[in-house]
Image 1 (cartoon, rainbow, N blue to C red):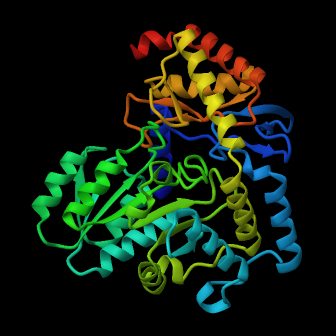
Image 2 (image 1 turned 180 degrees about the vertical axis):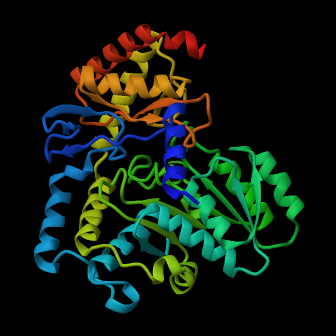
Amino acid sequence: MDFATYFQDRLAALKSEGNYRVFADLEKRCGSFPKAERHRPDGTTEEVTIWCSNDYLGMGQHPDVVAAMVDAVRTCGTGAGGTRNISGTNHHHVLLERELADLHGKEGALLFTSGYVSNWAALSTLGAQIPNAVILSDEKNHASMIEGIRHSRADKVLWKHNDWRDLDRKLHAVGDRPKIVAFESVYSMDGDIAPIREIVEVCEAHGALSYIDEVHAVGMYGPRGGGVSEERGLAHRIDVIEGTLGKAFGVVGGYITARAELIDFVRSFASGFIFTTALPPACAAAATASIRHLKTSGAERARQKANVARVRAMLDARGIPHMKNDSHIIPVMIGDPVKCRMISDMLMADWGIYVQPINYPTVPKGTERLRITPGPLHSAEDIAHLIEALSALFSRCAIAHAVA
């Protein structure tokens, strides 16, 4: 086989479809976020404003978080030295897991190197190790959950997105087998929020283990940042709450929280935990500082919500189509992969605005979009500039007509 030609042809097809991904070379400046330096291919730089970061609250540059990481590097060095199984658990890991268990009101927590790995490892372990288990998965679950379920080789049943009645029917059809229900709280591409109470009640009625992915909600919702499950007073009724340290908490890593015996079970059987180098102690220390801050401070969440409302209102005033939802994610709909890429490029080149296009396979074909995430550090001037740019480009490219 001519591998080189095969690779080139597949990449050429991606480019012709408008689905080829191009990464911007950006350099964040601590204290200036959401501003960043863009490094052009010609070696020059320019300042841009980031509008699609998952560092939703700007905690990646918070003085307490930065100081905690710097102090831990000075005292512990850089890396963890290997897996926790071989090289030992650093005390910063222990402190962070205690903080996470407390955040979600659970007996225990377990750290992983990313939110992707925590979903993959936990779901694959539960599905593989529980005899005759069946996993019922929301049809729009994240790729990490899908891969974990697939790797478990357990039977899988898809239920209609956010449709708890369909889940109820399919749980009833499964019968007496051990059942695991996997779903998300905030779905990151459409920004919609699951009917968590109804889903939990259905799980309880069928004796199913409930597993919720809160990666786009932790830090963002609830009086202490425990996610939508905390905001709605349901955390204590959910068996496993999974989250990330790499979005609203501004660091890196993933985790699950649950009853002590479930945490110990996953710790003992999950290859994605046992055989992976642990998070650097400095990352754990920084995440602990971020969680502690957001448990007591609602200022960042309040400013972020106000900016989301302002952006939505200004988009409506200009007639720019965006998907309605109750979350902090604003999908501005384009509906064409080539135009989506083109508008993203023009926003960067002509307006100094960075918004990455979201195309297939992340979203279905025909639903291409710009995914905007206003944060507490975007100024009124930043918002006005964004709306003016989008309005000009939508008129220029006739996007509103194309979407309608």
